[in-house]
Every structure is written in C-alpha cells, then in structure tokens.
Image (cartoon, rainbow, N blue to C red; front, side):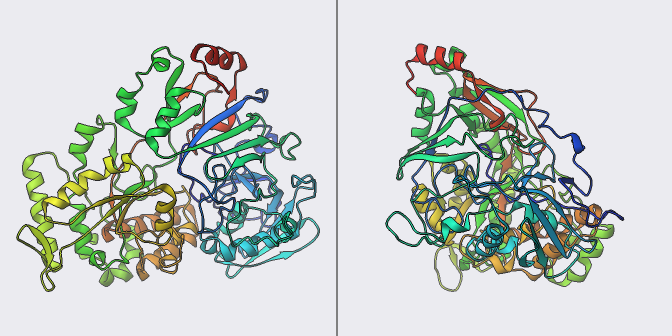
Length: 620
C-alpha cells in the first residue's frame, strides 16, 4: 500500500497489435510486454533478500468504525481502501515502476479479442484465502456483481461491463456492452476479489453478514496481511501472513517486509506530529507542509540525525489540488461567479511568504504529463471541440487559459476589480460593504469545509480576498469522520479537493466529472459537474483508438474543464518529502515513474532499531 499519496483509480491501456489477439499475457505495457519481459523475477529497486521482521508504527487521524471500504457509509480502518489495501488482492497488480503496466496476480494471465469486446482472465491455481480455501471463479464473479452494485468507485468504473461469465473452473470472461474501449481488458485487472463464502456466511452470533453495511468483524482476506487485533476507533494492528500464497510472485519479492503494521489513532494533525517527535508511535511520515519541512525538524532526534529527512523525485504526474466549488448550491451555478472566485486566489504572495517558494502553480488537471493542454486548440484537438463551439466559452478557442498572477500591488487591484465586474454580471453587487444578490439582497455565502489546521492554513489566501469583497466566507472545521460523511453526501459549499490522475485516463473520468455520478453519494464528482460536452469528451478519451488519439482527446477534456472554472487550482510539488526514524533499510534508487518511494520495499534494521530505542527510551 502506498502511504504517501492518495490512491486514485489508476488505469492501464492496451493499443491494438495486429496478430496478437487472444494471446495470453502475464503482463502488459501499452500493448507491449513489460520491460522485464519473460524473465521478471522481482522489481529492479527491491532487495530480494530483504529481511522480514519488526513493526512499522503509524498514526492515523480521526477514528474508524468499519472494515468495509467499499461503501459510502462509515469510516474505514487504516490499511483498507477501495482497492483492497492490505487485506484483499486484485486480479492483476499495477506496476510499481512502470506507468500503465499490469502484472499477474490472482490471475496468472489474461487475453482479449481484436475488437476489445471482452476480456478473459485465467486464475492462478495457487491463489488462496487466509482460511486455506482456493480463490475461485465464483468469487471473482460475485465480487464483480457486488462491487458494481454497492461501490461508488466501481459503479462507473465497470459501467461498460455487461456481465462476468464462468468459462471454466479457472477462467472467467468479462463481456462488454460495446467494443473499442481499449482499456477495459486491463481495467478488469483492478477488480478486488472478495470471498463469497465468507460474506454470504454468518458471524459468531449466527447473524448473516451484509456487505452493504459497515462491519467491525475482521473480514477474511487473501492479502499479505490480516487483522491481528483492534480497538474500535483507536487502534488496529495488522500481522504479516506467514504462508501468504503470493509471497513468491515477482511483484512481491523483496516487499511486504514488516511483520506487523500498527496504526494508532489521534484526534488531529498536531497530535500526529507530536507522536512522530516522541518516537515509537509513527516511524515515518510523508511531509506536506513546507514551513515544517524547512524549519520544524529541530527536535533532539532530528538534530542527532536519528530522524532523517529525504527528498524523492516524483515523475508520475501531479494531482489537481484546489478549492472545489459545489455547483449543487445555487451560488456557484453561474460560471462567471466561479471565474470571479478564481481571480481572488493570490498564489504568489502565499508561496513567497508562507511556503518558501517551494510550490508550483497547478494549471492543468493533468499537470506534469503530456496530457496537459496548452496554448489554444489546434489541429485534431480543434476538430474535436468544433462541434461544441456554441456550447463552450468563446474565449476557449481564441485565448490561452491563464490563471491570475499576483506579482505587484497593481495586479492585485486589477484582479479584484475584474472579479467585482464578473460578480455584477452574474447579479451580485457590493452594497454597504457586502456582496449581495441584486434582487434579493441576500449576502453571498461560501463556507470552506476543512478537517485540520493545515487545510485552514492553505485555504486562507482565497478566504481573505473573498472577505475583502464582502463575501460571507466562514471556515468550518469538523472531525475526520464528519468531514468524510459530508464529502460523500455533498454537504458543503467549498472544500479542498485532491484529484489524482492516471497517465492513461479512461473510465475513472466518469466518476470525476460525469453527469451520472454528480448525484451519486460517494462519487468523486465533488463539483457536481453535469455538462453534456464534458460527458462526450470523457467518452472520446475512453474510446480513443491510439495513444495519440487519447492524448489529443485528453487535451480537449482538460481545456473544457479549465474554462468551466469548477475548481480554483492551487499548487503541487514534483517531489515527495519523507521523514523517518533511522531504523530502516531502504533500497536505492526508488521508483519515480509511478508511486515513489515504495514503502513496501523498506525493511527494519534490528540493530538500528535497538540503538534508537535505547537512546531515546522508545518502547515498541
């Protein structure tokens, strides 16, 4: 599990190669074999002889009340996510060091026809649940049928899959509702496989289990770890499965090295930081706060070089992070209002005075990739957009999209004046120091929902300028569980959203921006976008006929999203900051193209750990 970045639904794409239809594949990279070829023994960056042992201590903020991560109800325990987390394996495994690449996992191979109308997966006969029972085709079919019904993440992701059919005791075929979707054969590899016999059984009280509801009964899994013990809402410990069926697969050699993974819950990020400083509660942390990274590591263990700061290069592309405006609320329905709010965000002053100029402005939903739009639409991209000209802003065709730059006092005044003008055009005027509706006199209100102090810190640059214009702009901090619940039910005016992207966008774009997902609880369409043009461009991306076609279609989608002003973009950093107590062995170099660094390839050095514990009085 990657501890450093929010997981997104990464996808892989296969482009047609004549003469290779129905070929069984154990791995695939953009229609070609992985760079490891048929000699794949382990990832290049791992130590295949890494020792097993020790406990990785981590801190989680908030609480948990469920071991079911697939529904929009409840808060899942640390170690679980919609991709299975530590407990459940998937049909195929996403490569750690190659973009758009899948490797064999529960399925030892897969195949598909030339028209991409189906995909067939052949299960590894060694695949087992923790109770020793084999993972079967029936488990796969039940998992697909169930997750497509109950999971906000998978309902659109698998939207073009009609059914899963049992071909034989080891083969399952997924049939699609149309051909030409070149990523679907690979998308099915992301399916989390769940134990049908366990979920359809009864618990210790004789009660029938219900996967549509939260549960605190430790589920049966198939992964590298199982739940060893827990205290609801406060503590959970995972233990490595000694006889894990997939431990010798190339994707796992040299990885999953910790005997235990312990997560202890704290109330907020301040407590989390104190737990890290103390030692023994949090062994490593991904740092996301420039002020702390630059000045905060001055406690005794850091000064003694017992806590290490390390920067890892990240070439995987950056997520869109920004202020999400909820168009389900009337005040954000007018595009001119959203554009006006975009003009109020002073990134330059914030970056210079508060974050040491370490951030870069985000100006695309696909920043850092060839998929990001630029300039004005030309050539094939223009041809894609031309049929929608009367439904798109005219300036999209004549102007390069640019975000406001606050580099002088004069520029600040100019941006604020332009924002006032746009508000006025949308029916909002300044009266007695307040921005009010010209007809009703009601003050414009935009509450920013946050879950911690740092979100308030990064949210204030926009809030400050909103208040200058007379907008009622409160900041509402709630606990993590309430934040997740309100996010899942779209109960907010604005929030700070992070929307990671794959280097091969496809079906997951529907849950980010698609109309059908706008009102589905738990989807990632945080803005509530319902735009036929966006829907059409999403389908153009999904059904791209080549990588070149995909890139051009994504440029068009990116451009339309930007000119829709659905999000006020903030910033990103093309590096990952990691701080850790000096108890680890870390293989080098770490991957940079996909997730980097790969925490699962770390191991605990018992001599280093012993010395740390003795010097700082740490008790494990």
